[in-house]
Amino acid sequence: MKLWGGRFSKATDGLVDDFHSSISFDQRMYEQDILGSIAHATMLGEQGIISREDADKIIDGLKGILEDAKAGKIEWMVDAEDIHMNVETLLTQRIGDAGKRLHTGRSRNDQVALDVRMYCRDACSETSALLKELIEALLDIAEKHLHTIMPGYTHLQRAQPITLAHHLMAYVQMFMRDRRRFADTYSEADVMPLGSGALAGTTYPLNRQRVADLLGFSAITQNSLDGVSDRDFLLDYLSAASICMMHLSRFCEELILWSSAEFHFVEIDDAFSTGSSIMPQKKNPDVAELIRGKTGRVYGDLMTLLTVMKGLPLAYNKDMQEDKEAFFDARDTLVKGLSVFTAMIRTVTFRTEEMRQGASGGFANATDCADYLVKKGIPFRDAHRVVGQLVAHCLTEDKALLDLTLDELKAFHPAFEEDVYQAISLETCVDARAIPGAPAPQQVMASISAARAVLADQ
Image 1 (cartoon, rainbow, N blue to C red):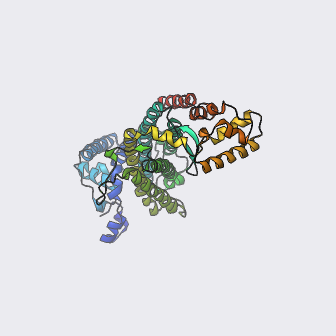
Image 2: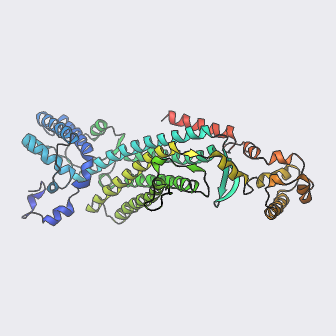
Image 3: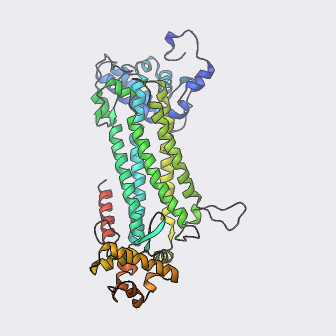
């Protein structure tokens, strides 16, 4: 008979048992569930709600179950429905009637809320650590390429010269924001719901703060209805995971493009590439493509939980059992994606000469040419028009701006002097952009140092 079966006159249908059970996926929360139960039993004994002797038996029994579960010695039971009932059933089998006192003053509703909050905290810490490793890898690469010139793009068209370091540091900023989002999610999850009961608390004199302290929570929930029905913290995780995957996907898109023969900016290591079953020459960036593809999967997990929660009346509803598979899938996908991407980016070979050649073509220094005229006293709009005419001339003659003679330049405007060639050289174009946040090497190095300082404090 089910632990809740006293009101029922017949067993649930086998189809219902299979459909209803969540043990196939929520078993991964066994450690959180057992630690939560140990804290609850400790508090029950301290408050005199159950005897100290029974509390000690429960705690010892739970520790034994935890040890056996970590050793892989436990087969979870489908007919016990979920991890909470599995643990309680095993406990009662092992220590007898004392095990039946564990559930005093709590409901599975607040128990599952506790477990997923604890699991979410762990997931946030894990994700933050992986992001830190990725950021450190990017900082190391950026510091080696402070002077590696490459084209910057808008609309995927060559726009202005920048450095590889500056480009990589744009992703560092994205991943730093991701870390802050997961830190915020940790704070939202770090609120202890046990004591909410099914929805209306309990008449037992529970010491909720004591349980929170034992489990390392910074606060307790302030409303029992909200305590059992809140999944905002999971939505926060899924949202943060979706944004982080989007950042990984953008980076992967660029690596995929850059590894093509048309760009030839990077060489992805053989260990992170695959071949073709029919075309022997192929080297495919499958790892980057798969991360890009799995981003949609994490978006789907976010939409799943948003859709589950959108029409639920207070308080707990069985629909909310669907929260965990979406959460677990997003966590697993993100963790794998971050791990393999960090390993891959550490082994990428950047073709610096090809990058420089890319910056040399496409008139990436045209803006600097216009700025040169502005500094000679020409209104910007007039300078913009003159340089546009120069570009059109170069296209006709199959030349770059730096290929034009001074006489050719003066034919378009007399303000051009010999110093124009220095002014529109790639090094000058980069080095002269020396305001904070710009690609000049000293500014990028300052950004690298600032990022390292932030990581050192966290």
